[in-house]
Image (cartoon, rainbow, N blue to C red; front, side, top):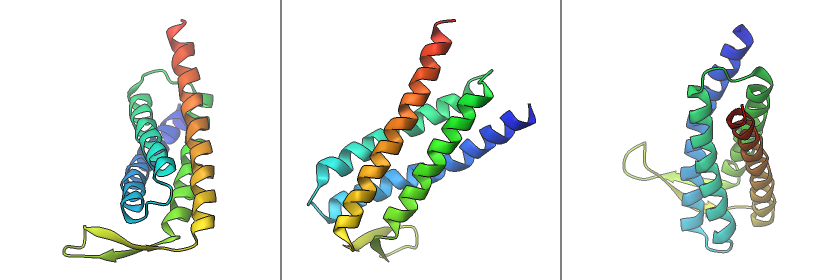
Length: 138
């Protein structure tokens, strides 16, 4: 039971990072239009993943292996978002909370990082959908 609680708390801690990642991806898309379709798809899929994670947190009786896999996927996604964040320059304008992307560095690396993130998000969504399907079959 303690492990399940720890996993749920781990997922709760990742939700703000994932949500901030959606915002960052949209800022990247607005700052650079060289590959907007990939960025848009990733942002939408990541937003859907956040919804899944929030629903999973609220679901009673979630089994530990599913939570463990979701935590692993979301941790990989958060690390990928950090990598992408390191490839863009943010400049603060106005208040400290409003940040605007000034420039994108290392575009080939950014494209690769976005593709890897998309794969991780898809993997996490599939894990959660399989869990939901298994729960509905009971």
